[in-house]
Length: 117
Length: 115
Image (cartoon, rainbow over all chains, first blue to last red; front, side, top):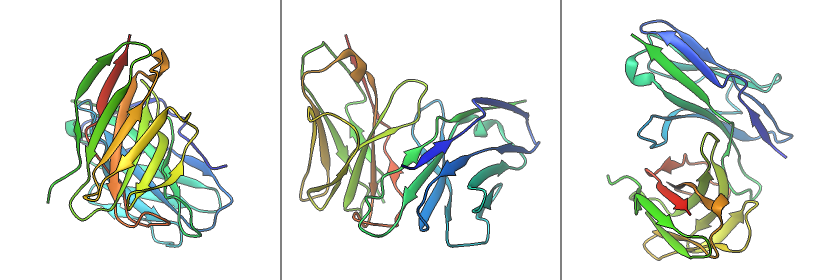
């Protein structure tokens, strides 16, 4: 069974600084996608970034980038130039792709990020 | 483009009652997934509907059931409510369903409290 582990329950960063959130996962699948979702206090889950496992190049979206290490099954999120609006719970998620699999998302327990002014 | 919407926003029920939660998928999407998020936890997959058929189910008892309609909107029904059913229920829509590769987009959720 696939699992997703986020070992940092809470993190804090100063505005304008860089922070990295960690995520590891376990799977025997070769084809899968990984995601980071953000859930602000208003609770709507918002997609931050997505990585296809078959792509070697790390995904980037503006100030957000990932460090995807397939062999190590590691998928960390780097937030550059942190802003107050980045304060939220961040979830790492995994989904299998292909072979008739339901593309259900398997989530980690989340990391609560607080950006301090 | 209309995003995913859910109703109601909040709901309070008593143990043993039944509840129906509703979700309208994003325009162009044909797949709806439901998740339960307990306080302080990550969401847990309940089930997914693709073109009006159940397309996978998580570890939830049969008293959790669902429907998807021809317009791809969906309902989550929970019978015989238990205290542990208190949670945020999230609906997510996507395109492609079975082995789909599309990203899931979430609605704002329904907060269910069971007393």
